[in-house]
Amino acid sequence: MYTQGLSGPVDQPDQGHDPEREARFQARIDAEERIEPNDWMPEGYRRTLIRQIAQHAHSEIVGMLPEGNWITRAPSLRRKAALLAKVQDEAGHGLYLYAAAETLDISREELVDQLLAGTAKYSSIFNYPALTWADIGTIGWLVDGAAIMNQIPLCRCSYGPYARAMIRICKEESFHQRQGFEIMLTLARGTVAQQAMAQDALDRWWWPSLMMFGPPDSESQHSDRSMRWRIKRFTNDALRQKFVDATVPQSQFLGLTIPDPALHHDPKSGHWNFGPIDWREFRRVIAGDGPCNRDRLRARRAAHAAGRWVREAALAHAAKRRARAQAAE
Amino acid sequence: MTVPLFDYVLRLADNALVLGHRLSEWCGHGPVLEEDLALANMALDLIGQSRSLYDYAGEVGGRGHDEDALAYLRDVASYRNVLLVEQPNGDFACTMARQFFYSAFMHPYWQAMAASSDPALAAIAEKSVKEVAYHVRHTSEWAIRLGDGTEESHRRMQAAVDELWPYTGELFEADAIEAALIEAGIATDPRPLEGAWRATVANVLKTATLTLPATGWMQTGGRVGRHSEHLGHLLADLQYMQRAYPGAAW
Ligand SMILES: [Fe+2]
Ligand SMILES: [Fe+2]
Image (cartoon, rainbow over all chains, first blue to last red; front, side, top):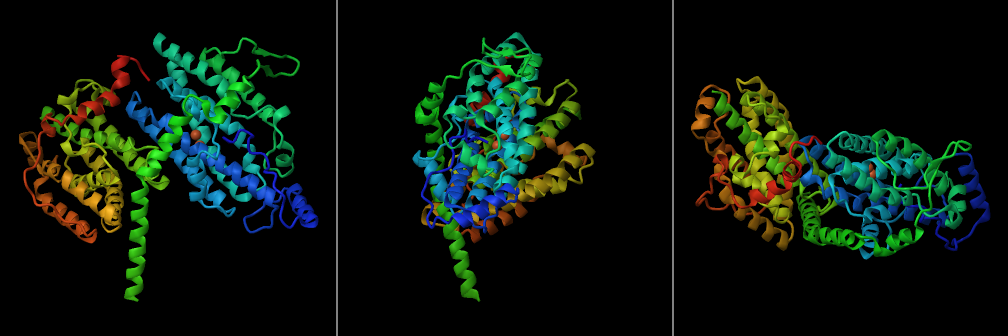
């Protein structure tokens, strides 16, 4: 998931507040029943899901940019094809997710307009630059890795269309993660320059990857309701810890150093304890002042604007065909 | 015999790689999400074809070249692709016109090559013909949508067709390198395919309410290594890592 726990329930007075219906709804959720598009749902549930799924979809689409930046420069034909296929998968994820959001009575156009207007959020991770080929390995290893940690519980999300989209997506994300790790392994076993490139990428991506899980539980205001609705099943901090515990041994296997002097294994809990996260940086990047926020939005807006005449032509042509078919009847 | 076959396979491989690379430049910037997927699909098909062809070229070249040595370590003058495929993406109409012209040629070409007396090439052709059939369909549909869409899309599609037309003649050239291979049933003679290609193109352009350009001077040279200025920039991107870190494995 690329929603960073920013998408807690939207507090919105439910129109026609109906405690009895809500109780029945909650009972279905508690019984682990799936909610489907035609079922009654509280307005807050619907809006919370729209926001979360949209943020997730936007993240897939914006996430194509840092990696897309390396497709033309990939160092071998095998890597080029694999990276192109990966970025294509992300476009597919965006499509499934927009389609899942559309089951909640909002159109893809509306959602895309919100992204382009800068009013919708996407994961802060994609506001960092992909500077070297090692960044492509690191993004697969850490960013897709963190996404999987977040997304596996979403396969059991109470909302059916979202849960089903996540099942498909998770399979591909774990493939991306393995592929990223394999790039890192090649670099780690490569020349001194390649090893340095790998370490530099880890240095730059480590902390932003931890921020992908969203603010600490102490600051995550809406977690309770999302948990009660089974949109969310684990807290941000629990998932972050799970990610660190899984990733530290991988970095050791690679012979790379995680840029955290406070990182140490706690034999009592069995967890890897890590140092403080710079939440000011997180808030700054979310607010628009990351290294690439403006570039990312500019690229999306430029593609959208440059494609306008194409989309208009497709609509105009379809209308002409319909008119001709009608005339022929 | 070895040398002409090597050169010939390189021509096919370079066409596929250069065009696949061009399509991959679109990734993340397409006019609509579905098209980002479709452009990546076609790019992946072409890059896949180029890899099979380079692999085979390396085999017949007998110089221990692998696919990456062939793709990443030859400079502009050693590239053997036709000028058409190295032309810049331009707008979406240009990309579709370029892809349509190329695919409408390669479809009958690969069909004929499936009967090549060289089993390796016949196998590559058999796989490629299915992929290119989809490219022809997809790009024909767009040519028609754009030609018969809005005033703006019609103008852009016609401009793209006119702009790229002078690069289509090179597709039908066959020189001494190929003559013996054609004779031996290894290569297909492209010249007899021109009629079918023209018919496909004329048909689509007519449905698209577009005008078939008058045939004037045709540009040529790519197949012998005399390229446009665009290819050097494309290779600067493509080969950057191998040039910056010679000998490293990735
Ligand atoms: Fe994804
Ligand atoms: Fe992914």
